[in-house]
Amino acid sequence: MLITKYEGNKTFTVSEEEITPPNAGEVQIKVAYCGICGTDVHIYHGMMDKRVAMPQTIGHEMSGEISALGEGVLGFEVGDKVVVRPLDNRAEKPSDKGISHICRDLKFIGIDSPGAMQQYWNIFDFTVHKLKSDTDLKLAALIEPLAVACHDVRLSGLKAGETAVVLGGGPIGMLVAFVAKSQGAQVIISEVNPVRIAMAKSWGFDVVSPVETDLKSYVESKTEEKLADVVFEVAGVQPALDIMTEIAGIRGRIVMVAIHGQPKNVNLFNFFWKELKLIGARVYEPEDYEKAIDLVTINELPFEELITDVQPLSNIQKAFEQNDLNPNGMKVLLDCQA
Image (tube, rainbow, N blue to C red; front, side, top):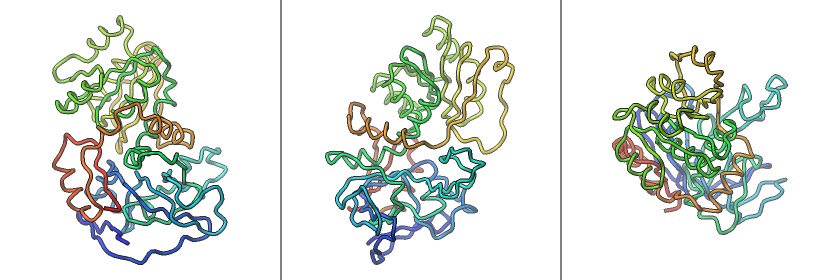
């Protein structure tokens, strides 16, 4: 089988290895597609070299079919279409309060342990979610990032008829917008990239560039000056932090989706003045995966159009290099069986 490994210094290798049978409690998955996400790009750029044990097979946004079952595995059959929720929470402690998806010693599969950018992958059965037999496996590779969006929207408490502003129209921001809109919310997307603005408008979203238009005034004009009920900060830049408390209305909720590795300036006065809430949101829980699976199964949203490139697994180096050169791209997939 083909297996890829990140070697450091923006370098991937591709090699042939023997297929090994799954251990007890594992399933073997014939990987169909694996997406390249922002975390994978950070790894490629060497930003996580202290965490990733090189050489390492990375990747976690995947879909595939079960090709073998380890001893003791129940509830699955060879041929089942599946996706993996890549969280290893076996080190959960009482101090984690039963919230296992963010337990202190959580291991993220595809970062802290081998991931899906290979043709056959042996993985713990407790991470696997079954798909319907007619599920499009290319679209199913979007389930992991879509589950992130489902988790963000669920934690926000967004209701039909409320206004949500999404700061950042990249892949996750767009998925958050899709999920919010599917729940009956009025959605406004703030994005600076003209290509992404045009893309979002083609999908029927209300989109504004904060470089060209005063965002607070725009949101006021769309909400009878009530401002946003929910703000999703997905951009991860200081201007988004500066504006998020301005565009949130009275008792608005702000969901922190972006990862800020260093302390940042935030206008805390607005939290006092408007009784705002700040909600942290990290990865997902099983119910978010099931919600994402349902949305892909129904397939009423333009998920296919989010996929801007598909490369064979053997082209992994080229795929990451081209991804760097295309700031307009949304989601790049690796075809692991091509």
